[in-house]
Image (cartoon, rainbow, N blue to C red; front, side, top):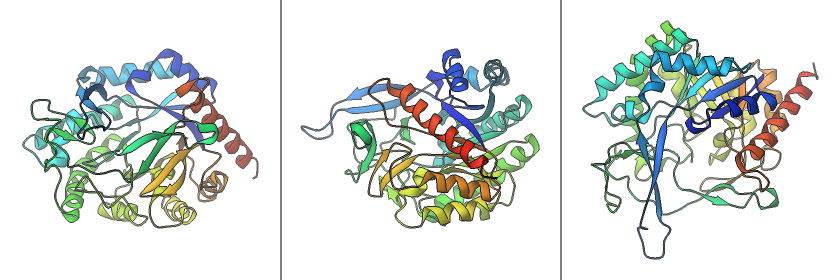
Length: 358
């Protein structure tokens, strides 16, 4: 098993490539989505102001030349680009919404997968969700009062028009004062059908390009959120994904933290079951305390999950891919970099110890 670091679009810099290398990483996961944050008044008197993400254009990054330049910059620092984490919502919203631009967007996504194969980026991580990662707040639940995300069953409002996956894709449609939206209010079965149709069209392209597609489970893993269905929200749902299409390119983005947050299931049985399939694309390693509808993210060496045991199961079942801490608590001495350095150092030491066990 190898160590990687996820870098969002604004963190894709020479200094951060070197930070990853210095922390012991061999691989980088790139997130190319751009967004701007705008603030709006609270929905209710005395409530918190709304901080809403708006999609911003980043078309050059998604071209063959843009992907090749990104991979070359990463390679120049002695690292490999393992995956792109997330399609750009601007290319994807009507695929999930079954809207008028669906066919056009599918062709864009297929072109991106082909270009990734030409460039030599072997994996695309993605989510298929209306509500996205929503409802978490910053709490001081990690050791020493470190700030980290927590979910504590907040009131849920419908998704306004012009928004999906937690971002506004159409500013003309979006009304921050409208709390009566109907985005994504379809049946669970219909949403699984849309994912199946998406995979049936995309996976032959991915197979030909040599690119695996890895689906992230729903975070928070609730059956519904903001009135919309959630797909992989329970321990058996990754099997449902694998059963949709037998292609070896149909894989799981195996987020241990999200799986541990699920209301039901034993995390060690879940890791054992799915790591035997050979269909884990890559692993997000993150510890939590609690389960939905109340949980907090904590440092990797505290919380409910014995991460050494998880890594041993992965090794025992032959997983030899990339592991990354997807997010970490913010440490008082240095914010993002300090939290990542702590998690990366812990994972690297654990991997070295486990590899030495024979």
